[in-house]
Image 1 (cartoon, rainbow, N blue to C red):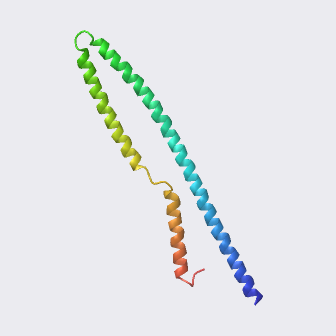
Image 2 (tube, rainbow, N blue to C red):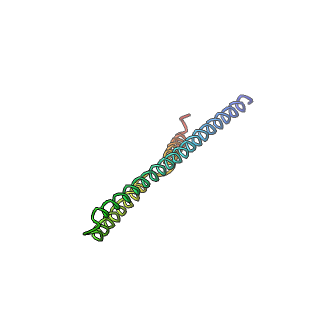
Length: 132
């Protein structure tokens, strides 16, 4: 009788150990995904801000150059055309940024996929009592 109790306790301890290991692994994966997402967002923010600054300075200087170049004859036409070009480029870039943001994979997709695999394995192991 004590062997059955010891076997049952041993089996319960092993099950608890396995579940703890699974939860620990999943939490580590979740933490890694959070860290990766934070790093990705930080890098994107840095590059976006740097690009905006550089393009802004370049556009400002180019606009001033063209307007000064055409000052005597066509300064209003130059200002109007350049404004239209910059608004069109800004609109195009906003559309591209929105599509890029929507194309990003779901947050925690790796963790959710692993949890789904775990659930599937537990369900198939539970349905077949002959397996251990």
